[in-house]
Amino acid sequence: MDNQTTMNTKGNTRLAFTLIELMTVIAIMGIIAAMVVTMGQAASQKKYITAVQGDKNKLITMIDSYHAKLNYYPPDNGLLAASPPSLYDGLAATNPLIYELFGASNINSGANLIVFNSSSTAPDIAASDYNKVFNRGGIANGDAVEPQSFFQPGPLPKEYAPYSKPQTGPPICGLIVPALLVPGNTNNFWHFDSSSANRHNMGSYDLWAEFSIGSKSGIPTIITNGNW
Image: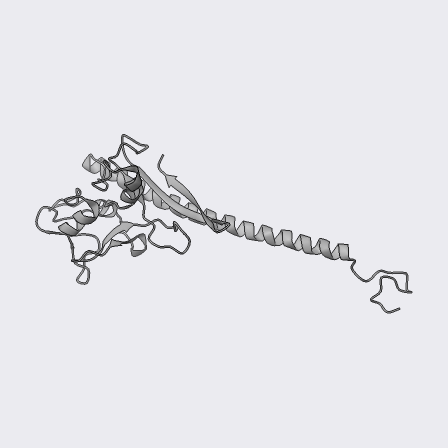
């Protein structure tokens, strides 16, 4: 007998694995692999949730400072208060929050608004373009002498993205959530409501993010993180 048989002549020692033992080892390896994948998904979900929560807390601090300084909350999309339910989510996500929190210094002095991304390559946005996107005549937080900027420092490029590309001037931007709504998608914007009868905080404002923490059977798992 060779040493690959289940019994040999030296002490009857068994050297080969039985089928049951092999199946048990494979099952244990499968369980460990599943645990590793689950732990990785949980860590990824926690990363997204922590990032969104941190951004939300920062925005809440700025919005509350805005109210303390100006005695009113930043305005939202001008159509939001009277919007039908079918349009509510889209209008809440198309808000001028980034412009209100940064402020404008020439809101009453001409057709253009001085904003955070002003430069020689990205000139001031046109008031007419601002109105097309936000349905507002201009930025409420505007003072020719002392605009109130609640971003310290100003918004970083990773914190905002274009809503649209007007025919004149640079694109109008919005604050983006640090997590995607749908995996592979881009430009997931913060929602803001300070005027409608649908908001949770009727005395102030609603600020919330909708984002994906993964998918199950190909369907994204969407959660909401809001200030209520």
